[in-house]
Amino acid sequence: MIDFGFTVSPSSRINLDEVDKKSFVALSKIEPDVVKCMACGSCSASCTVSQFQPTSVRKAILSLQNGQISQAMDFLKHCMLCGKCTMVCPRGINTRHLIISIQKIYGK
Amino acid sequence: MIYEGKKKIWADYQKEIPEDHYFYVRSCIRQSFFPASEATFLDITRNKLGKDIFETEHHTTCGGIAYHSDTIPQETVMTIIARQFALMKKYGYENYVCSCITSFGLYCETLETWREYPELQQKIAENLWKSCKLEFAKPKFLVHASDLIFKYRMQIASKSKFKLVNKNTGEPLRVVEHIGCHYSKMFPSKGVGGAEYPYVLVGMVEAWGGQIIDYPERRHCCGFGFRQYLIKGNRGYSVSNTHKKFESMEPFKPDMIITNCPGCPYFLDRWQYVIAETQGKTYGENGHGIPVFTYEEVAGLVMGYDPWDLGLQTHQVSVEPLLDKIGIPYDPAKKYLGRNGKYLGEPQKPHCLK
Image (cartoon, chains in turn yellow, green):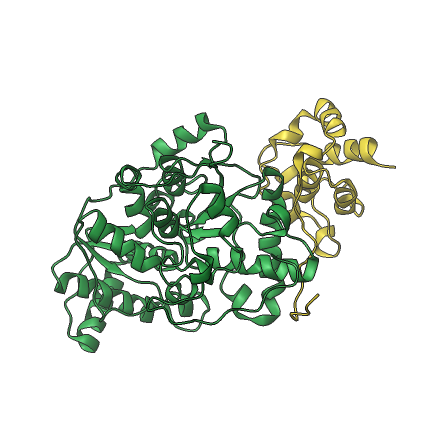
């Protein structure tokens, strides 16, 4: 093996064919609005906690769709359920309720 | 590949490509990376197809690499480009064809900027006159050299001696097409087939008998990305991009890769060596890599050019297994001989990559 002074980083590629979608389907049944998210980021921008901790409903939804469950839960674990994100969502998603439902389905 | 949806996309992105009379500008880096590609383009278009393709030794770089490396300002690049266009007019041409994808993207960007900001265009025209005493002009049609080969693909197919078919099985070769990012990702309407699934190389491969394979990271960058490679500390990022693409295409067992950019074939070819030496992984059959070609090289191969005259000995990944698969004859003894029979020297053999 040759040392070139740089190396290949582990791939961040996600194979969606291998992602278990059962939990997300279950979530969509009780929270149909989850598929309405257009990832605008208004929730993250308005979030008080996100100024101090990596908290984002937008990133959590994307991570759940990509099957990255623990990463998604990390994006929500500091949420105080203040509901500001619900007030600013242009799609009218009840994000506060959605976060509670995510915790019920995916939480340990 | 699932054709139905893609055919609809391709129908939405068609561009007008004039048949003949072009002012041709070369790439800065292709002549050292893949030395015969541009010569092959000129030979095919001029001598085999009888087209009027003019080039002058007075043209320069477009400034793209310096621009994308943030070392020169946009107005400088625009003045360089204005000079290229002025040369086109000086020699009596209206159609401009460039060999490089970076240049093509930069020309598109510049023309759009001038359209959006006419006062800037006026300033560049003044700069051009002050610095070069040349009259400002814009091309009537701007195309990339792969657009032209795409347009001539059926004429090339009619003169072909070989097809992209496995002679042992009779099956079409499984081909990965890789488009340079600056071809149509910035301006989808400027490319044949748009940005998502460009048709320009697909059309060539289909016309010459091959089969395009689809894979998840098809639209991913080759890894060049200018500063990702030019700064040594960032090269891990560059090779990781390439690694991601190869991991994605590997299950589809491609026979070859065709590209239309100066950087892409270089990095897809050379990084296979680095991946092999650092990871111990090869992606072709029996310890070989997947051979990577420019579209001119593939056109030359199907038209019966000698592989060594096409410069295929300068590739990192050996091309002989693919030549054997198609049935293209070659003389191994002449691999490292120059045009006049002069010995060019042989590179050291890699440890992992055959």
